[in-house]
Image 1 (cartoon, rainbow, N blue to C red):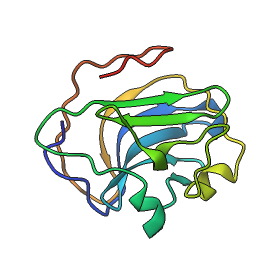
Image 2: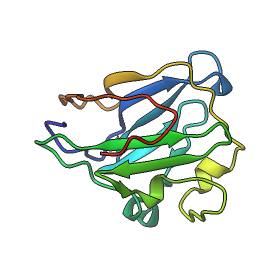
Image 3: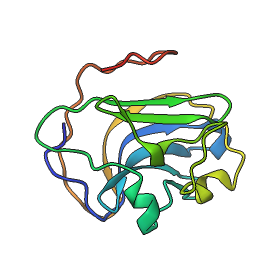
Image 4: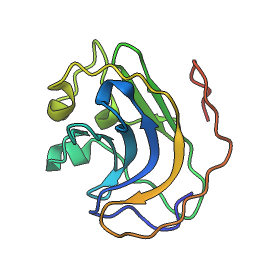
Length: 145
């Protein structure tokens, strides 16, 4: 549950150390341009691209109530994301699915090797927010809301 809406500044609320990105580098989930996004710390690539078209394919994180945020990272580079059981097209990269707003993300053959999952608020522009996490599940299969 977020106390304030995401705004134009870059923030993270989930970070994952990723050995493929280099020493002390993370795959991050957060927001920028008022929407949810992924960010690779190593090359600063975003998913979706932060163009008007890319922004339109992501989702705004509602505030003031708990939301069901799910994501899947595959060893083959697949990324799938759901917000309240609804797939988020701009936050999807996988074989057989075209995402015209993933040019930054797909310029590298990215296959994550995550070694942890960390929850909290990190702002790269000085924003202050409070996030609550409840019913956190880590699984090899989608659990659903």
